[in-house]
Image 1 (cartoon, rainbow, N blue to C red):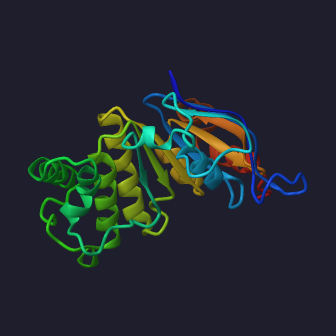
Image 2 (cartoon, rainbow, N blue to C red; image 1 turned 120 degrees about the horizontal axis):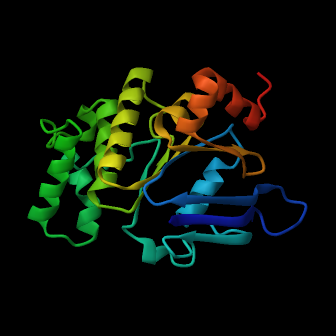
Length: 249
């Protein structure tokens, strides 16, 4: 069952002058419930435009977008609490402790303090931060802060989790560990995940299915990861993705 649909979507910025370049054009895709989708492509290929269209920050110039049966731009408020985002920057509030940051979304939903703190504590413990719940963001490492960010995203019990290159600023080992933890949590909680990255290796590691974007923002190819690895092997799949991205290397 598709819970995200893009149907022939186009996005042109700076008005509708036909001379303006498209950030997305003829963009069609679907995401099924329970899938973990990796979106990969070179800088400027339209990944961020797709991401912003999906969460309702911008309106398409043409075409139709449906998320959980709603138009994400026109019905933005109706999707509140059903989508959670993990950004490249952890975006923690420096005046709040780790547990207070995780509980913030629940506070906005007017959940009683004891209940929201219990949920926040549970997620921090699940992410290995049970001993750090009362620490301030400045006293945590970059990996720890991003774990807090992940806990905050899961704490509100959303239906869809979206990640915009969340581990790109971390060292390779920390990023790989958090990738696997994020993937495990998405599967354990039966969520749907959309993971935007510029790293082919990251896309292969995390995705059930990979959507390869090319400019102007559209899906140039898609791969079911398990099937593609069986056919091409890891190095062969990497090269296939590079070719579809338009990379000459």
